[in-house]
Image 1 (tube, rainbow, N blue to C red):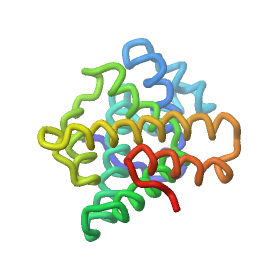
Image 2 (cartoon, rainbow, N blue to C red):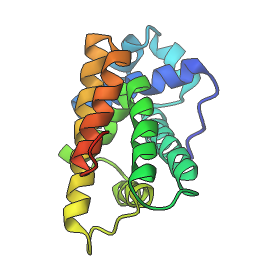
Image 3 (cartoon, one colour):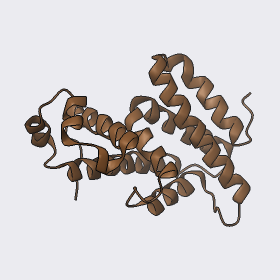
Length: 183
């Protein structure tokens, strides 16, 4: 079982690794490329994570921990626009702070089969937004659209380097995608 990040250094490594795994896939991402991305030697990287597999597993696990934290924060709220708005705020903040993890999670939509626990990830999203895709397909599509927009826009905000200006616009776009107009 992958261990939890113990320091900000580990979180930085996980985010950089997640970005590379998202861009190139697991097989095409070398340990050297991972080490170079975080400014460490291969030995230095292996001091933090014992193998490429362990790093990959830790990146996925870390994304699930963050998703679970969102579930815990919104679960006490009743289903509806206020809960969805709060979920979007929390998810946007995570996405703005950890663009690599967002890329990795988004890859699971575009490269099915790489996420070893994709079904569990989908259940977390259903739990956050209180949706049953089988009985509410239109709403499920809106949620996927909102999250896809969030992924793309937070990645762009990080490229531009202006997360503060982009955050309210990202939230408005995602809220509109869900069918809740910003007031």
